[in-house]
Length: 208
Length: 208
Image (tube, rainbow over all chains, first blue to last red; front, side, top):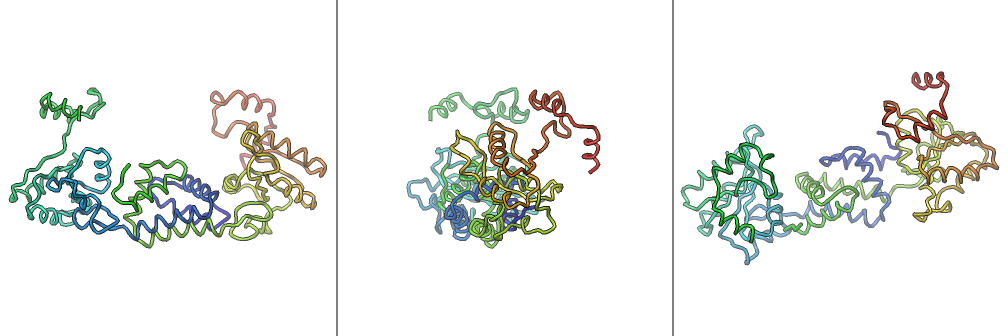
């Protein structure tokens, strides 16, 4: 598209660099900003720049943080003996929003995927082993997506963890709450029968 | 949603202020920016802030511009005797992208809509009359959306223009190219028969 203003063309170009935003959406956002107060637009630009400049990575769990150690790792009310292993900070946010987990995290920063050139050495695995070696961790929950790469990652890490004798669990897999049997894929349905759980557990979960 | 970082929470809040961006999309954009170089994110913020601070409104046609008079109004190769009246700068961009119009514009800045409290005095109508009064304008094309408010606006302005005896045209209304008769609404279809045009005109349009 052509714009009679270079300022607008440049702003549209910046927005189209964002994922899922095409040129028409970008133009809509730019024209919206054009109608806002100068102060508001300045605050928008500054907030995002400051976020990128000042954000830190937690030295313990590799979650993003405003400080050297993240809010979760520095919270004494959380259970520091249970470590939930996740792929990315997006997963930390998702689990935190369930309001059910009181342990801490360890962010891998990806999963093992030879096709994308991601080997175990690129992930935060050594630091996880180090945390376990310190002796405080009593359980590691593998909250990794149930894909081939995810399963490979879990397998690799569980082998590395074997020498420390720390219990490893994985998040439950099965049919979603509200999901309908007939629309569930065969693998999930088949495995959910094979790994069926006592009815009491089901009741506990529902009343929690 | 809860975020363990205030920097992230603030950035997400800024993005959700934009139209059509909910909290999940905002988070996706923020996490994308987090992965970019600091310089790139800084440039994103600065481009948008500069756009808002430095943008000007063309003193002739009220289009947005980088300079006091916009690119279109200051272009001597354009036909300054034909003025296309549009509601917003978005319409200027849309018409410019058809690559078929060589005249100039006049941006009204809205349409008459008593329900939204927009009366004629809030629109750039006086300045249009002034341009016509100067005697250079030979035709005014009303490129206003065919809604009730749009028709009211056209009616109001055409009455105001009557004393200057300048020809007024409206953009053609009818069935879209590629549109199918059976899915066209009754009003458009009915009016397209009432305002049918000579076949020669149709041929000229197609070969242009």
